[in-house]
Image 1 (cartoon, rainbow, N blue to C red):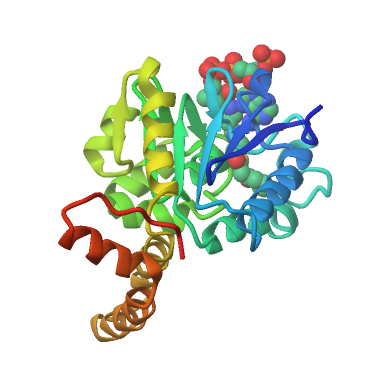
Image 2: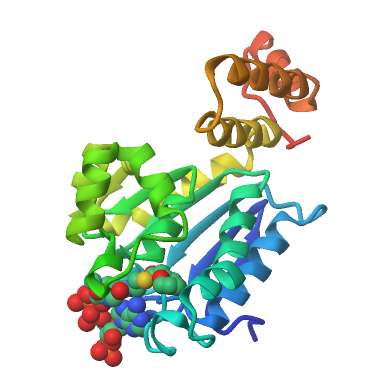
Length: 263
Ligand code: LHQ
């Protein structure tokens, strides 16, 4: 029997997969789900877990409909939305941001509210053609949270970000891809295979370099050009000393595919 009530969590060949599994509520984020996500993400990131990539997707027709509004409204069990965010959303989102491995989200259906924020935490977002993205917050008189006001303007620019946030309209997956909000749209039937194949490839990649890439790009939002050059040099020094870098160069010279180990 699974240890989790609201998720399916698997680890296979270095790839951890979290499937949000409350399909009757379009995988809305309950208190239990937040706690279980935190446990699962921590397990994936723990030293010695052997995990080298994480994929997040949803069961059923939704990816994630945001905060579970059936659980005491927007304040959750505490009655205070701010405390709800700080106490139980931020730990999950920060744990994801700090992971030293690539993260993919396979957006199988609606990604709304904090569910959209969750989708955008990934390094690579792939969506099914029928999926849509919704800054649902304003529709219930709230402001975007769980990182949406940080990530969205950076991805699509302020004009589109503010229109999404203020109008609370559904943005179809293809439009999201055209805007640069996500990486790729695929036919619904192809989503799982496409995303899994990409995640498996990342799980066999040069993990240290992939980790530096995600942290460098995250840092670039707050750095000037010169600081970012410095950050690149530091990361390159570390990446250049890995077994995977040595293997990559050797494989190139020997005209064979590299066999990266993540070390
Ligand atoms: C739901 C939900 C849901 C519970 C669908 N909860 N049951 C965090 C904490 C602190 C402060 C506040 O902010 C936050 C972050 C947030 O995420 S706030 C934003 C919360 N999310 C929303 O406002 C989205 C609400 N949902 C919708 O607008 C629609 O359900 C969408 C557009 C997602 C999907 O529409 P439909 O495809 O037409 O599906 P539906 O509305 O019929 O929903 C299907 C079922 O899922 C339904 O249950 P039922 O028993 O009637 O079949 C919904 O009640 C349930 N559900 N979202 N967030």
